[in-house]
Amino acid sequence: MAIYAKDLLAGRHLLVTGASSGLGRAVAIALAGAGARVSLVGRDEGRLEDTRTALAGTGHGMVPAALADLETTADLIKTVAGDRGSFDGIFHAAGTELVRPMRMFKNDHAAKLFDAALYGSLGIARAAASRGVMNDGASLVFMSSVAGLRGTAGMVGYSAAKAAVDGMVRSLACELAPRRIRVNSIAAGAVETEMHARLAKTLGDAAIGDYERRHLLGFGRPDDIANAALFLLGDASVWMTGTTLSVDGGYTAQ
Image (cartoon, rainbow, N blue to C red; front, side):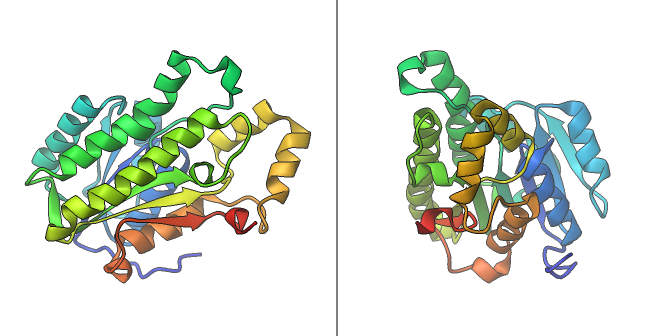
């Protein structure tokens, strides 16, 4: 059920990363449904094309790419802005999950977690700070997690990556405030996506049942995050910046 006007983002150009699946796909569909012209970035070209064909409206584009480090990500975002026009908003959802006890955590695990979640975010931040990439008054939204706010065994690396994103958001908000560019993150609880399904297999039935009980309203749906993203990318949030918005079914209330 649509809760936002179909012309909420009419005439605006927004970028969505991680758009080939999960939350990125859900947000891209919601933005297009609210009238935006959407540029999609994701590592799987076939699934990215599936997302594009699911978008309402016209003028959408896609760039298959993995956002794995600061420099190449910044260059890619600048190129997309140069080819398709500067952005009125960016939603960065690219990332991965990993459950690993700290005694087994290694360099390659850290690299896997930090590549898209942190280094990709820093690359987007660098591009956004360059003239011609973001329009004045635009909005950036980075996906974070309640793992950056609450401790969970086996999630040390993932928690570190997400806490780093939230810290980056606060300082980037200070840098971009003179142009009234807003920067916020969404700390999501467990949302039923393909990534969540992989995590459930790793944890097992007993652990995943306990995890669900820690969410007072149960696990979320991709649309729950998409609705929050629409709020942060639209005009209703023009006085919000440097904030981590918890959308977690009550997980952090306990």
